[in-house]
Amino acid sequence: DRVYGPKCRTIVDRLVTYLHQHFPNASVSIRNDPKETIPQVMSRLILADYTFCARSTFCLFPAVASFGIRSYVQQGGVAYFFDEIAKAYHNIHLMNEPFLRSSEINKQGFNYTLNWLTAK
Image 1 (spheres, rainbow, N blue to C red):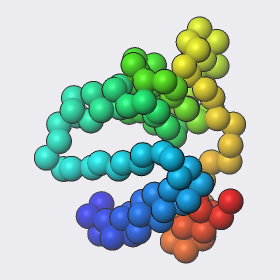
Image 2: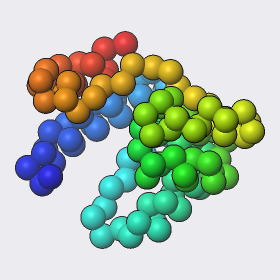
Image 3: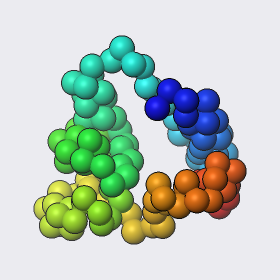
Image 4: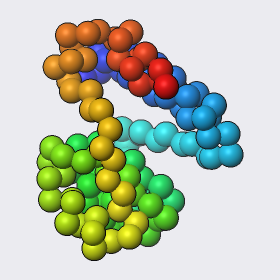
């Protein structure tokens, strides 16, 4: 995955800029240190005020355990069981938004992906 590092950094930086432009009063922080342990990462997700999760169980379970204000979870995929969880927990909000699959990213390319993330 190391070869994709520079492109991932570009996407993340562009996304942070987009979020700052659309939510100027929000504090946006991106952390990803290879020296961090999985419990450290999970703890940060659980303690965040707001958590945004794509279709990945890595983020889904900390979203349920969150002490934060709200967790936004992409509906569908591995989150098929979150419809019922969202009914039981007031801080879980399901997002039914377009989802860019890795096969589409590979087919469309880097610039398409970058524009897709920040076009709205």
